[in-house]
Amino acid sequence: MQLILIFGITIAIGSVMFALQNNVPVTVTFAIWRFDSSLAMVLLLALGLGVIIAALLSSPAVVRGQWTASRLRRQIAGLEEDKAVLAQRVSKLESEVARKTPASTPAPVEEKPYVGLKTLLTGGTSRKPEGE
Image 1 (cartoon, helix red, strand yellow):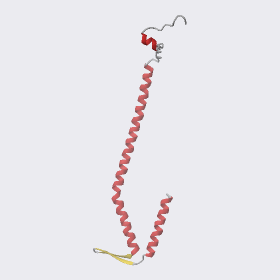
Image 2 (image 1 turned 180 degrees about the vertical axis):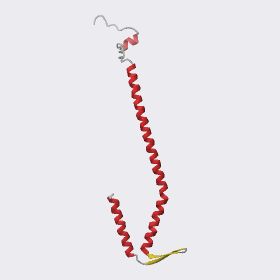
Image 3 (image 1 turned 120 degrees about the vertical axis):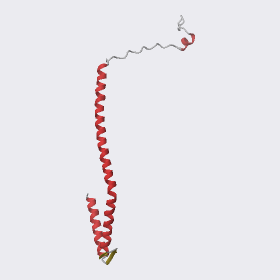
Image 4 (image 1 turned 90 degrees about the vertical axis):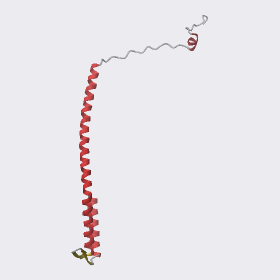
């Protein structure tokens, strides 16, 4: 906010300096209309009219953007509410499923004993020689 104030004061000081240095009287004529004033006043009026015209031409786009942003904010709020409802429903269903399924421990998997390569190749059990 202070930056905008400083910028405005700077523009005002520049405008006053411009007006003091360009105080030559001029006559502006347009069709049947005639206007006598200083050069600075005529230029500042032309600048002001340009700003007003630009603001009027850009205002429909700004209003349309604000409407779109407002509509999207409402849509986001609705979707967030739907998300919260669905999250509650999911947690409710998960708790129901947890209550219905018995808490059984899985059966231990029986590991087969190690079979050596010799046993696999001979197709039988490996025997230890009697002397050992």
